[in-house]
Image 1 (cartoon, helix red, strand yellow):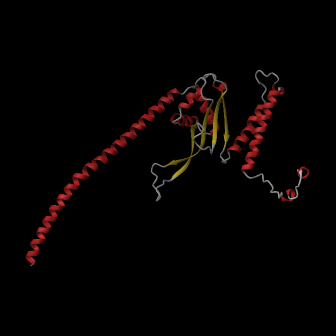
Image 2: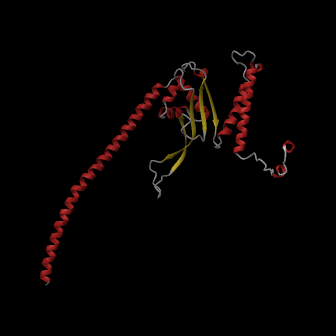
Image 3: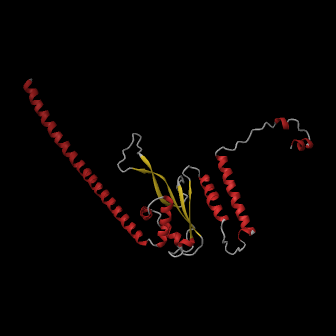
Amino acid sequence: TESKYHRHGENLKTRSTELGSAVTGSSLTTVLPASSSVKKSIVLSSESRKEVAKQAKVTKEERRAQIDGRHRYLISRLADGIDLSEQQVEEIIISDDKFQLIEQFFAPSGLKKLLFFYQDVLQQKSNASLRPDGSTNNLPQKKLFITMGSTEDFTGTCAFFLRTSDEVITASNVSQEVNFGMFDCNNGNILQGLEFFLSQIMIPALKSQQNWGDMKEGLKNSQIQEFLYAVDKFVSILSSSRQNIEDKIQLTKVDIDIYVRNLQNPSDYITAG
């Protein structure tokens, strides 16, 4: 029995070895192409990233070559207002996906406004590890970027340039044809930021304006007075709206039953009124 079992064991061992070899061989023919495919994919992905980075660098240098006195004017105003160096602002602008909006702003009959937001934006670290729920660690970081003003939430500082005519913007007329301004929304209240900008900057500037073009009478002109009154009224509306939103105006609840309980005829209504 021992001899028979030994022989059977050898046969089993031999057969299992052959089967293992067959399975292993089969597995290798299946796995190797997949492994090769993964390596190829990684190589292609790496090459693609290099190509994208190379193209981005070329684009930046092309944009840098386009920068002239008009761009320098914008860059200097932004640097002064946001407390960044002109070199930093230039790098940010030529790297922005919406760089073409600047050219559209300079063009004859071009965009009426050019907006920049400077605020906290969530930045994902390249080496950030995934959390158990699959999310990543995103850290807020101050960022300056060009915007149309309709796609991103405004939570920081807005720097804006406004055209005063439809003429083409050149290096020689940019300081006369383009106005620059900023207003702050860092406290999260855009109404308060706009109210402060108008009441503390724009209205005092308008009321001290000496040259009103064809209106030689200046501030004595009735149309100018009506205009300034309308701006003052608009600021008052902004202030009231802000206070309403902040619940600073509380309307007292009134029990009207005592007034309407005994109303019988029109004269009673008149008296109650």
